[in-house]
Image 1 (cartoon, protein in one colour):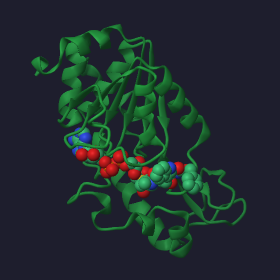
Image 2 (cartoon, helix red, strand yellow):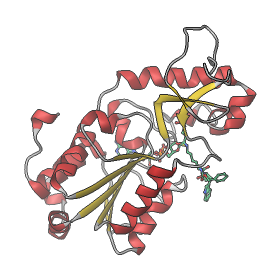
Image 3 (cartoon, helix red, strand yellow):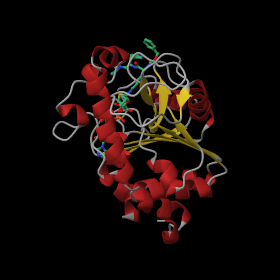
Length: 253
Ligand code: BJW
């Protein structure tokens, strides 16, 4: 597969001082986590986002929204990183500055060994109080759905970012800075339609970075990206890392 990669790209990667990566649901597809918008298999092929992924939906029907996230929590707990996640962890070991910005809430990048991971949309394995947004670590066993905050009695919700909610400051600032200062920016497995994450590749382009998109389908970014690989990331990324820096350490997989 190495003949797939232009030598100019490999040279740019080897020389890069700073790499930023934006990932979306597609990078976890080969781990068995459904994407959101794929026509047949996407999570929202059957459910409308506005019925499940907003604070208004939670207030309207907290039990249904809680059960939806419990179902996904149980699924995410059983899945494992795929070769795409491991290849990004390996890439981080080869570059002096590396920022992995993810829209995913599944924690698979950390499980694969990535260290500088900025979670823009939160993490399904953390909880917070709906009333005051403070973290909730545990609560007394209960059949109640959703359970109640042990401090104030408010409803407990997953610590993820729904539509209309602000992104967490720290990860968003880090993502912004990495996009504006990187030499190479990767957009991997995202439909590039949800803002503000979808604005990051444009920031990188305007700042002069080489932008690489990896996605089997076209997106609004495709026409502007410097290099486009229309392939599954779990197949392409290990080959790209190998072509640029040498063999991926298989003991880490
Ligand atoms: C593969 C593959 C393989 C498959 N290999 N690839 C500016 C303009 C217009 C609208 C807005 C704007 N600014 C803000 C908005 C509103 C809104 C928004 O963007 N709406 C758009 C839909 C139009 N944004 C927000 O509300 C955000 N908040 C915000 O901006 O705050 C400021 C504000 C406050 C108050 C009022 C207004 C603004 C918050 C966004 C939160 C997003 N949350 C979700 C749900 C999380 C909870 C949950 O999980 O249930 O996050 S939405 C959902 O989409 C999820 C994802 O992280 C996100 C992105 O999806 P992603 O990852 O791209 O997945 P898919 O399925 O779309 O794509 C997968 C891709 O993978 C596909 O392209 C496949 O081809 C590909 N693929 N197999 C590689 N093997």
